[in-house]
Image (cartoon, rainbow, N blue to C red):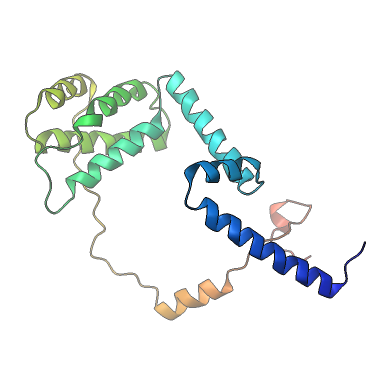
Length: 199
């Protein structure tokens, strides 16, 4: 049986009310929410992307070289260093892990981006060990770090924004934002000479 326009509107309204009731119910239960997303197609693409990212991460761990883990932990330490009322001792529960991956990733530091990132990690760790109070875990990690780490340059701890002001007027920035468009289709010919050609 085919539904007319009014029929579709009624069905859509009923569906919205039913979905609202379901979402409201499962929002109070982790188990129901898990079951809902197990059978719902919602966020399937995001779930696959997450699993793909986890697989890449696990492969890095298997190869003993996770730049992601090192980058994350270095960032966490850096945030602790720049706190206005910094704790005298922090990151005890992951400083050992951070140094371990620093050492393991050191042998894979070959391309330019990795080298610059390693300079940052080196500076942050040097600053960390010079700033926190003495602790057996920290001392052990510091010893392992100093065995392999080069002398820090000190130029990346912490990163300073600088006092220079942007020369772009607010009106120009807003005009640029309004000009932005989402690309929905592409030309079949990907030659650079045709990039600006109108279809």
